[in-house]
Image (cartoon, rainbow, N blue to C red; front, side, top):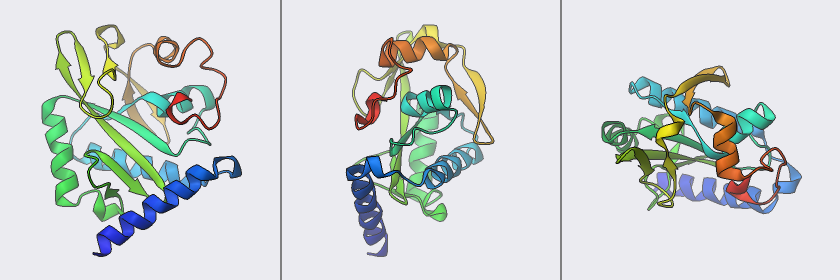
Length: 184
């Protein structure tokens, strides 16, 4: 019961912050969530990838996007996916106050921010996300992966960040779009 109340309170906090995006958010809480999730994944010998809006923030703003309340990490392969599921089920994230969102496998929440961990499985030459829309893919040309320094951590990411951002967000990716969620 305590866990459900915590999740509900944290998700309500997320919804309140989402309604007040223009008022600003405590970005340090978001950074700490991302770092703590990263640390759990590394402790499992996984290779977390910075992707989507989190990668956009890293590259465009040298930090997280201040009006975005979610973060995105990718993992590749069925073994990594099963390790994350086991870590969620066994409480490795909960030990850091990070709770799973019911009915949203691989979505976590703390302090009004949430993080999606996208498991990508290989289909042909590409990798398709098992979370979210089926068009979330990593393409063969985005490999080999590179490492980047972000928030005092070494994240993996795709090889050509700028080309990825153009493909994902369009030629105008350098211009922030407030109140558009994952659109940057």
